[in-house]
Structures are given as C-alpha cells and as structure tokens.
Length: 410
Ligand SMILES: [Fe+2]
Ligand SMILES: [Fe+2]
Image (tube, rainbow, N blue to C red):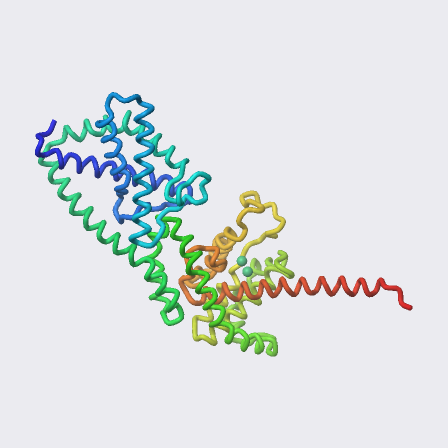
C-alpha cells in the first residue's frame, strides 16, 4: 500500500485508467454503430474524463452508503450518473452553444441530455465496475512503486490540461469555422476549403450530433445562397446550351476516354428518372462543365466527375443486388457504390472523387470540399427535378390526348 501523502497521485493514475477505459467503450460503440473507426470524445488523446468522474462518483457512493441495501445503492448510482450526464450536457450547451449529444429521439429522455435507456446502461456498467473492474485495477495500481506513480501522474496532469485547453479552443472554433466556411465559400480557394473541412472532421466524427447541427442550421442557409449565386449563371448557360448542340470539341476531348469506354456505355441499359443513367449523367456533366468553365473552375474534373457520379449498374427502384437493401438508403449508398466502380475502371483525381462522393449533399453531412463538387451536386438536382417535371408533363399530356381521342366527334 502507498503512504498517505502519495494517495493523490495514485488516484490520478486510476483517473487516467478509467478515462482511457471510457474512451475504449465509446470507440467500440461508435465504431460499431457507424461502421468505421471513430476517435470518440472531446479530447484529442485517448481519454474520456466523464467516465473517470463517473467512476469516482460510484466509489463515493460505495464509501458513503456502505451497509445500505444493494438495490438502494444501485438506485443512487443511476441517479448520480444521470445527474452527471445531465449537468455536463447542460454546461456544454451553455458554454459552447452546441449540443454534443442528443437523446431527443429516445422515447424517455429529459431535454435530450439524458435518456432512460442510456441511464440503465450506465447502471449496468457501474455494477460491473464495482464488482469486477475496480477491485482488480485498484489492487494492481496500489502495488505500483510510488516514485513511478508520481512521475506518471505529473506527466498525465500536464498532458491532460494541455489537451483539455486545446480541445476547448477547437470546439469553440468549430462553429466559427463552419459559419466562415459557408459565408465565404465562393471567396475561398479549394485549398482553404480543404483545410477547414479537415479541421471539422474529427469533432463531427466524434459527436455525430454535430453533423445534424451542420445539416439543420447551416446547410439550409448555404443552399439558399448557392441557389441565388448560380441562378444568374444557370439561366445564361442553359439558354446557350439549348441553342448550341452538339457539344463543342473541347468537352469531347476531355471526356472522350470515358464516353468511348465499353463499360460506361452499359449505363444506357439502366433506367433513371425518365431516360437512362447514361443520358442523365451526360446532361449533368455538360451543364457542370459549362458552369465551371464560366466560373473559371476546374471544368475538366467537373465534367469527368459528373459523368461518373451515378456510375452504378442496377435499376435503383427495382433491383436484386443481394448486398443492397432494396428500399434502404439508395440515396446514401449509391455515391459510395459509384465511386468504388469508377475507381476500378478510371483513375480519378481528388476533385473527381469528391464530386462522386458528395453529389447527394446535403444528405451527406459534411459539405463538398471543392466548388466543382457543389456545382455538380447542384446540376444533378436541377436536372433530376427537370427530368421529373418533364416526365410528369409528358404523362399528363398523354392522358389528355387519350381522353380527347376517346371523345366521340359530333
Ligand atoms: Fe446520384
Ligand atoms: Fe444523378
């Protein structure tokens, strides 16, 4: 056992271990639910301190309520851990003006900060902790050499405070960066946009609710801005396009290898909107090419990325691809499928990849990293809805003319 004046350092070691264990739990939970590795938590390092604070709460309960019935102690764990989660959630919202988690979808919840199901999970964890984890861990820790413990504890405190400070700064800047990104989108160059997107990625991966925040609060704003920005260009270019077919030579030169590829031509066999995928991507690519050329952007990547943005070989409304849920998430899944297929056949640059991956934005939470991707996603939506409206009009006209022809002539 340790001397009394070293107790503090031993508890710091326990704190580090429990914060690390909390990080492991969150990483496993988030990586499994999101099907990719997620570095969970608000710190950069592998520690989630709220778990360690929770662990110390439980130890305090064990110490203060010794002799109470186990059921009563379990109730107290549940109450205290829920309170802890509520208080941390409340202050995170007050200080950062951001929700880091939100249980609003959960049936029994309080202000989205705590939920009954999660509180039950915390209680279960607390019982495992007090019966199995803490006795084993504390025994091992208390056997450690006190000098080693002191050195570790002081290094951990130094690291922890530094990480905490930088994490607070990065979360405070999170909102500012998003606002800046969207306000200045068309004044920034691609490298700056990439840099800002990268800086947002870790936090939005660690706290999926932040993606919802980006979607709800800001994507809608930029959508309106984008619409206004492109309207003038679009009107002009569409008029020109209509009076100027077939497409010019330059467009064919930069897309020739794709158009001539046998596999690409198979897209003619798959129905999409009111024609084939082939016809649809051809239209999207040409409009994107023209807009990007007008805006002095990388029109080559825009045209090529757009040609491959729906590069999938199945009828999305009625297919029997065994690995694809028929109804589920065609909207979210097909960009990944298209990118996978396109990479197998063509070599793509970063912009082309981003165009394919993000063309369903804002269904994808993070916005496109390149302006070209914005344009293609816009052109895709514009032409898809136009194709839809055209098809609708065609059907109405057909029905009307059928009715007319059925009327007996007098
Ligand atoms: Fe698509
Ligand atoms: Fe499309």
